[in-house]
Image 1 (cartoon, rainbow, N blue to C red):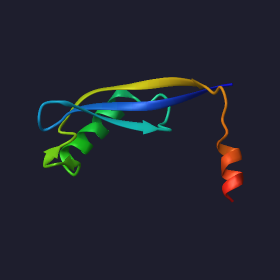
Image 2 (tube, one colour):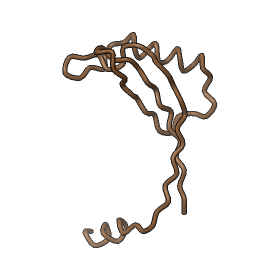
Image 3 (cartoon, rainbow, N blue to C red):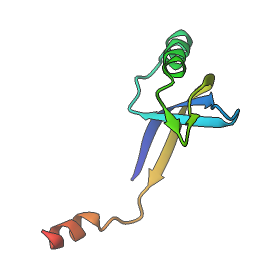
Length: 85
């Protein structure tokens, strides 16, 4: 069985002029460009996301929906969880 997931991927330029990505699983479908741009500006303007003193999301760069399909061959995780309980 194939499971498809959809993620909204937001790409920013960070404080070192490199690309930083923020991925949002379960994002609403059909979000407008205007909404995405405005919310990315809010994230960038907040400056609250830092790593090792570098602002991670300094300037909006691009946004896209990414769909991914996963086909499971086998999954023993439920069996393993039952044995541990």
